[in-house]
Image (cartoon, rainbow, N blue to C red; front, side):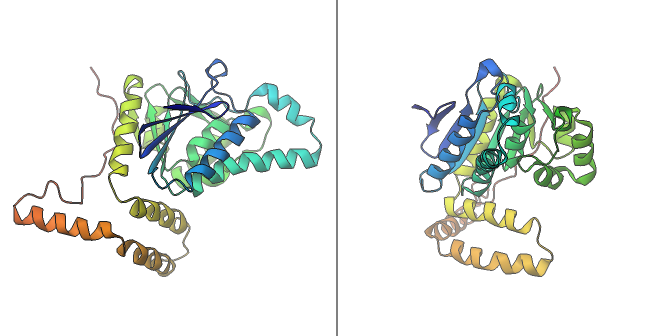
Length: 282
């Protein structure tokens, strides 16, 4: 079933996976205030939707997002400071919404992810990009500060400060293979395989306990800037206590013992990690 949240198409290929597609293909999914509002509203819904385990964020057509719509940008420049501040806060709500929901967010990026569109991809937990994807922190190209929609905080944590500085100060495009090398992308796939690749990853995540997945997302975010190992361990302990009380862990232990007794460890809880890949050359 497809639901329209204004310029956002929301589908559920399975009960546990939600796919939200930016839906302005005639403008390369350029962002509007209505789109920010729709994203924030969807995140508010997902915070209380215990059946949803993963959110996939993508774009309709052949592009992820070309950034803020320039027609709206002209209007924004003329807003009084108080109204402009309110608009910026609504934009921020979309980014913080993606970061704060318990479900991991997977960005499926085809074509361009530019400016504010890049910021949305950065706010995701994982990024699957196609071989023709091009990513650009284009704020300086528009005469704007690179500190926009969290990009100055999110990008250095993925790529390191040096590469993030180069991206943001030059405003150049980064191709898919470089994005993979720099940690900006987790996986590169063929454009025709983007949908199946990201859904396969979503299913692998959704196969685990929703509580364990949500707590893992939370502790990763909390400890990315932990000042010491001691602080990280202190943050981990209460979350692990919550996870340990879940019935899922007892089932996982029972399954593992059963598999070990049968001499079969392939179906044990610890599955092989996803390996970043690039398209096979034909």
